[in-house]
Image 1 (cartoon, rainbow, N blue to C red):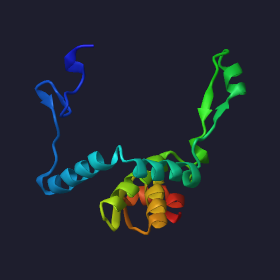
Image 2 (image 1 turned 90 degrees about the vertical axis):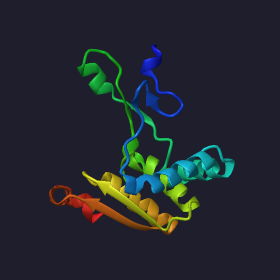
Image 3 (image 1 turned 90 degrees about the horizontal axis):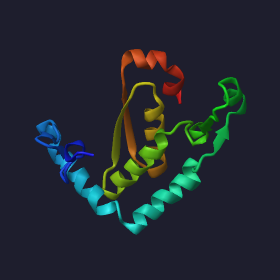
Length: 153
């Protein structure tokens, strides 16, 4: 693979790449990056994260062999990863649990999220409640009407 297909140690792709962040967000993003670097290899953080994934989220979720689908589509074997069995019913909580744990380590007291279909908002609010964090979820008006069940949750 050419060296131009992979980012350098700063995340840049040759003369392109890097990041564009609105100046008003730069301080917060820098703080987040520093916290991530501090905790990503921290044994206590990893232990807490893995514990919550197993005992709160419900990981690891099973693979389901879709036998009838496999037969119907000519013999290729299809397996479905059952992320719907996670707490909150989707894969979104796998990410939000780590984000919220990091925010808590950073001393944050509030989580802000945006969502379209609602699953990310549900997962964020669920994890925030568990960790005692305030949570604000932003969702577009059309999405709120379209995804009323997730909004209700």
